[in-house]
Length: 96
Image (cartoon, rainbow, N blue to C red; front, side):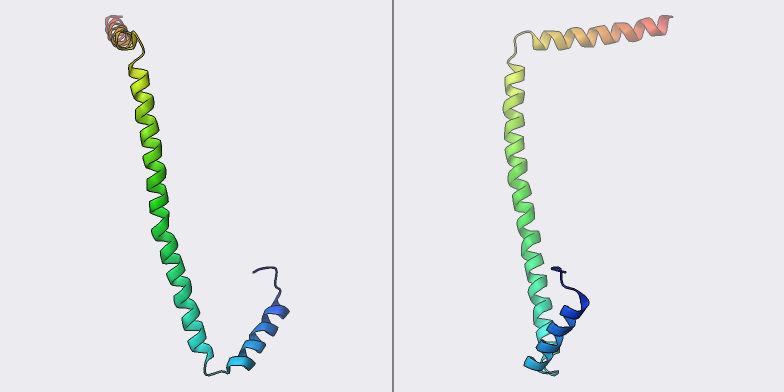
């Protein structure tokens, strides 16, 4: 915890106890807990937005790349030849 050892933490707790008193410590702890929960909630809400932005950027890059790949001359014909070759290979395996 921030490089603090047990003696340092105890000294800080004693100082807080002297400054605020025993009656206010539960209120302070409750307020601190609420603050931490709110910060975590805000952080979790922001996280999906950032991931969504990244996914949108990746999606647009992928769609651009797919369009460029589809424009390669002879690609469709090569895919068709590969499919036919695979079918012929499967048929020859069955005949053996």
